[in-house]
Length: 265
Image 1 (cartoon, rainbow, N blue to C red):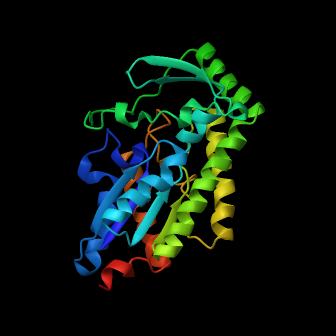
Image 2 (cartoon, rainbow, N blue to C red):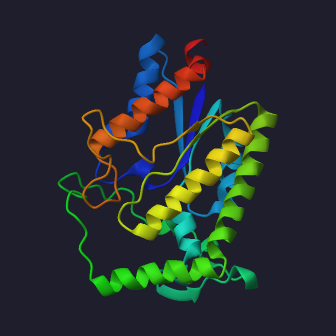
């Protein structure tokens, strides 16, 4: 029996120990019911258009019973920007404009995952300090988002996301795969970035309700002790946050009866 989780850096967060990442806690909670340890597969995605392809390829190898899909703000943020910097296939920095109206969208043509070192883990105070940047840099980044949104980049990004999720949902229905959508995490570091997460939440919560897909919001989640789930850098999720989200997903699986896919085998 397999549970597959699709998401981003939250799956492999560098400043949380491997065995304390939320999905490991979730698996342990599922195991605790009847001593059955589900097989876990993690799929990280960066480009929204590649979501179905990545899952289909993996599912053709080993069949999934439950797919947990994390909505992410980062791919939408990258496409929303008008001015986009990225690393090309040669590893050097390149610059481009995101212009969907001209079918010129480099953020969806360059998968940054291969250039991220997932083994570079640091557990000591990483993320605990607030990020300091100049007011000018902050202002220019916000302007970059807003200008891109004005020419339609944000709406275009949401359309791509929805199209990919529709394909994924249809496939899951045909293959009888249970589906759970997790809302985007808050992004308090930037006002515009946080508004993006809120709009993603609003749109896809409605989408999930329309398609009768279980949906778990975490936008306003707090830990059991009442603390925010984000480090002071307002981007990464704390250890307490990982624990809280694991428990929320487990409770959701129980509420909708999906935990029985494993425990009744």
